[in-house]
Structures are given as structure tokens and as C-alpha cells.
Image 1: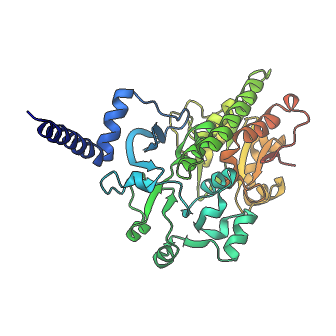
Image 2: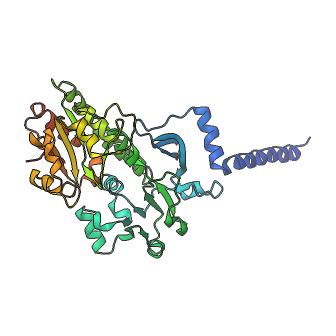
Image 3: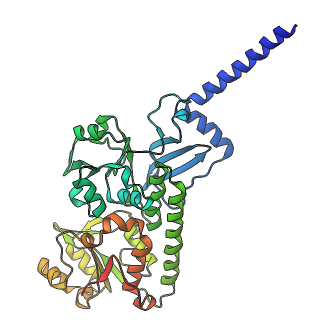
Length: 383
């Protein structure tokens, strides 16, 4: 075999290997799965049940799950950091080039995460603009720099196509529902933070948001600080000499929706050193009860927690005028109602990413001796 023949043979082998390698990499799911299995990758998520992040070289795999049913995978995305990387693989709707430059965001907590990371300039669309309280966002909406893409159950397809965000983050109340704006072919990213049952699990969704904008380090730093502060207050509450009883919410449309015993609210009460009267319930969602059932169980409870709606007034007189039966509870008589003005405090927008502050507020109400000089932000004892 002469030199020319040997050279052709070697070149042929290299060409075949190159083709094989290319074929293996063309399917990003198979490529990632093969490598991740051999490396036994672990998720970078520690508390949230609704998503996982797996990092491999310059690819991040995002798995979105139903927090109430973690085995129910809702969506998977592969985030790549260069357009050239995307071109290595077959066209796939699950491949997203990051960092994103234009995104629409359909919930207050998603907006809060983007603001904390410092990326508000990348938001081009929102929903329910009338309910957004953040002044910076409202200013951008009034200037037309952020467009409203949905309101009161209506979705504005033409506006969405005109704004043309790269993705729309939305909160599906039914895990596998088909969003009306999916008709635009804009990538719809389900954001399931509201179904998390722990405060740290809900706050960890800042990592989810950050992954799409290439801000992993900033989000990790923010979240690590939240964990440290939150656990500090948990340890403080554990030293309380008493554990007062508490119940939550109020009568509405002939039903009293009570947080489940394993819900987000119930877990906050536990961490704040309180004894939730429905803690034995195994549910994570709120469930309806008749007034008489709630009264029988909660009439002698020490504290009553209420998050006021936009039209509520945080006074005992207002509560009694709304429903005279409220005045029969011991927590009402003893002025032990823990009140949150959702509008004034931007509770629904900001508190999920400030669980350490929410916890400190509750401890201040339940155990004032532990935080005597503390100034609450969200929850106050009603006066």
C-alpha cells in the first residue's frame, strides 16, 4: 500500500468519524441524555419541586414539572449560549438561544424576579397591567415601552405578534393547558412557582428566570442570601417559649377557603413558630368549608391571618361591617388579627422573593419578644 493510498484511507476514516459524531449531536435530547447519564448530573435546584436545571458544558437543560406532582413533566428546554451552538443540532422548538433580549412576563412574581436580577429593560409585554403596582413598570407601560398582551381573560394576539417577544412566561393554573397565545407560535414558558408549598421552594424560581437571561451567578447569590436569612429566622422562632394557634383567610361567597395543612401558608406558620389549626390536613391547596365548621374549630384560636383584597380596609370596624359574625372569634375580640394590605405592600408581586421578610413579619406578630425592634413590611397586627 503506497503513501497516497494510506492517506486516502486515513482521510476516509476521519470523515466517517466526523459524520458519525455530527449525527450523534444533531439530536440535542439524545446528545445531552447520553453525556448526562455517563456523568450522572445532579439538578442545581435544592428546594423547588416544579423545575430542575442540569448544566453540561454550554448547555442547560430545564425541566418544568407540576410541583404538586413532580413526576408529571410539563416541558423541557435546552438553553444554548450561542447561535452557532443551536446550528449544531436539528431544529427543535425546545432549543432556546440565551440570553434572551425580549420577553413577555405574565405574573407579578416573574416581574419581581426580573427586577431583582436587573433586567427590566428586556421586558416588552405583560398581562393585567392595571394590577401591576411597581412604579418603574407602570412608567414603562404608560410610555408604550411595555405593551399589555392580556387582560380580563382576553388575549391580544395581534399585539403579541407586533411586540414579538422571544418567549412568554405564563402561569398555567391547569398544568397541561394550551395557552391562547400559543397560536402566535411564540414559545410559551410555564412558570409554576405559585404551586410550590414552601417559601424557599417558591423563591428558588429566581434561578429559573435567570437561566433564560444568562444570569445564573447573580440569581444564585440572591437566593443563597435568602436561604441564610430565612433559616436564621426559623432558628429564632424555634426558641420561642410558646406556640400560639392560628387560622387564616375569611368567609367569601358562602364559603371559607382554608389553606391545606401542607400548603405554602401552613408551612410559613410552622416556620414562624405557630400552631396552625388545620395542620393535620394532608392537602396542599385551599379547600372550602362552611362558616359553622370554621367557627367551631377556630373560635378560640389565638391569631387570625388575613391578606386583604384591593377593596378591603384593615380595621376591626370594617371587618365587622363586612360580616358581623367575625366579631365572635377570640382573635377578633383580643385584637390578634394579623393583617396584610396586598395593595399597599405589593405583597403578591414581591413577597414570594422575600420569604425571609415575610417570616420575620409573622414571627414579630406571634412572638414580639423575639424581634422587639423589628419593623414589619407585609404583615402587621391590625389596630
